[in-house]
Length: 204
Image (tube, rainbow, N blue to C red; front, side, top):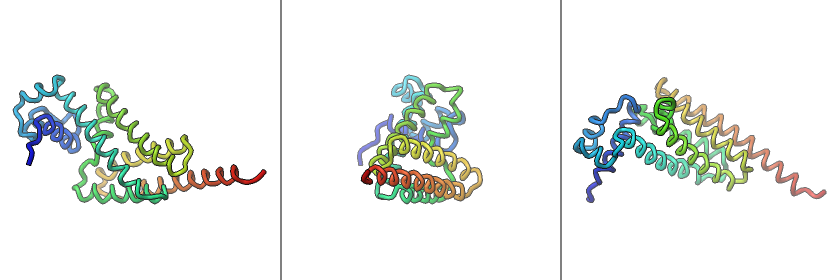
């Protein structure tokens, strides 16, 4: 088995610690201990120290979750069904994990928005990427640009908020409720898009 590079181990360790305890509570010693790396390797690979490691972790986890969302939504031709299935899957995963944070991006963004502008900017870029990926999928399913964007933005917002409530209440109910609400919103938008197409196609 190929050895994982030290910088990759550090980023993976930071990602997991951000999931578990957020940015402020995570120290460099915890990161290197979890990575099995000497403390000097942090500054060798990441000259900005903790902030740079966290930035890399946000980008890495953001890309991974973007791919996951796409994988969950893509198999469904019906937009609403895909959204509801994705929320069900998320509810099962967070419960099975012992209520760990599903993704550190939203949590860290909320935590450091006013204290770490560089990390806030990176988190915003990651979230923008998620929204654009999902919007492209919804456009391909027939939604107009504005509706596709609004739906994916609402899905991300609902899911991130539902994760907070689920962890706090130790319950999947907030995620399942969010999925039903987003499914209803998707059905409303897809029905409106279908009516518009019918009106356009109807003979004068």
